[in-house]
Image (tube, rainbow, N blue to C red; front, side, top):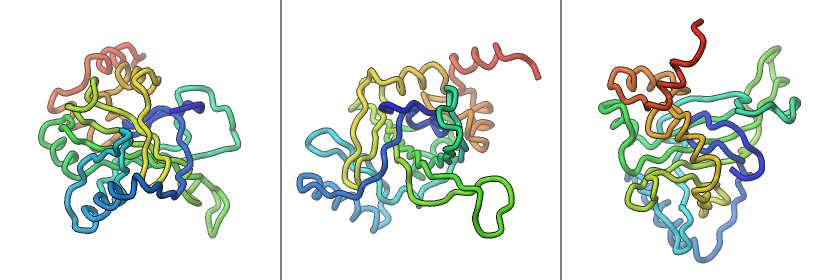
Length: 217
């Protein structure tokens, strides 16, 4: 999302990740307080929006279901070979349990794509990469059928109280529609969920066609 195009490992946005800045605008505090209170009580997260149409990010997303991690994934040639990043994907538990039963995502599914830096030197590590440092970006993919024309929308997290909506003209939407395995999400990169989608017969026609066109290994 934005100026730096990158892959969506999880079925969240294939766009630029902005750094997470902890800012609390006054007009967002009430909505943020409500979401925080729900998280502390253990209640399921329900997408909540500010009066300006921004999404209040789920502060408890790291307690959700972990789906996958990608390293340096990109649909375009890497612009900075010296920069490495992990993408971690999480989904709300209610949506995950529904997917296990149906092979697709229910309304109010929320996916979070968390970017973190990759390092190779540290402690006893001699080769490979590990996650290090703080967040490099946070993006959210929300299914809210009554709110968005295409059922899904992408948000770029600006702070703990605000995630800005990406317009329908952003390349995230067309990329997911054309290449995602299930319901505009990249389930082909989720090793525990892809077999379920295959068994349930929920793979998208676009993905199935793309898969058939690939050379046999």
